Length: 113
Length: 116
Image (cartoon, rainbow over all chains, first blue to last red; front, side):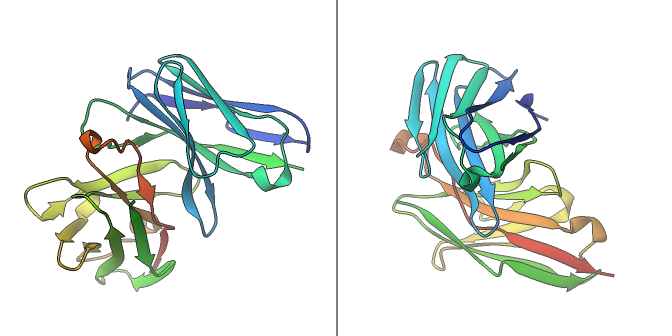
């Protein structure tokens, strides 16, 4: 299994509070991704990174920001959490393969009350 | 632009029966295609992938998929279902990185239930 960890694994927070989720990899892969998974929508890309300090938006980036100051860490921040951001968040990594084969972390279940 | 359509959000089959999960894609460049499996409360695990070459691809746990360009399909099959196959399955498409596409586009998933 690819070395990907996510923290925390579960979090309950209140509307309006900031939340930061962490993805950590030990594979030295170049690409890192944040997805959210919701019933009926599959996985939707929030943001991704193609190198240290290099990030770009995905299809559902509103209300989220990211940072990558080290190869191994990719942080997702909800600046002011809303109930619509209740979801399961997955981090993924992709490296030297030209096929963009992605490996996924175990996920973080976030509940915004 | 790329997209994936998975036909059937829920599929039920009897143990020992054929499993067929359908995936159709749209891509303006030669696609790379993937099937991922997600067991309850876990992340996604790569089941198999098609990149180039042989159009029949074999994956883990006895699954296989066939790339049919003329039908823009990449259906997942397994000859005999097992109780442990109960999970959600996602089809995904990407383009070669040298086309400037670093992203996967996922279908909405198919939940497979196995009937004892």
